[in-house]
Image 1 (cartoon, rainbow, N blue to C red):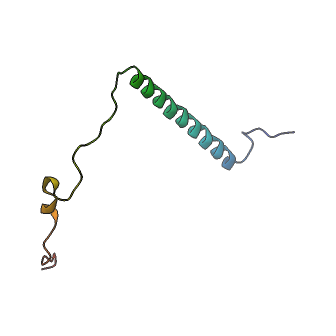
Image 2 (cartoon, helix red, strand yellow; image 1 turned 90 degrees about the horizontal axis):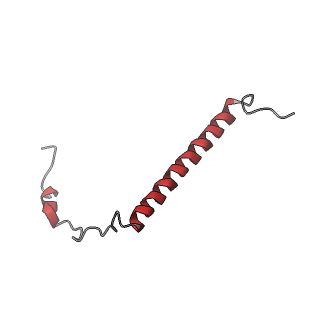
Image 3 (cartoon, rainbow, N blue to C red; image 1 turned 90 degrees about the vertical axis):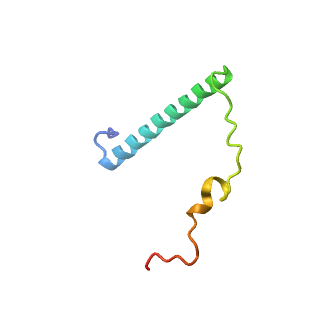
Length: 75
């Protein structure tokens, strides 16, 4: 005679619950991706192009944050 899931130890119930949460989340994520693809195909959203500026330390005051070599916080 098989034991039902309710009579098994709580450790097994936690694992079963974790698997259900994982499945539910994956279905949610897949559904979001399908919805986003549908909106993209029907031109409700456009392809992301990205930034055109290169990332450098010189851009937008990046060098202002660098401290001089003679600086000591303990002085």
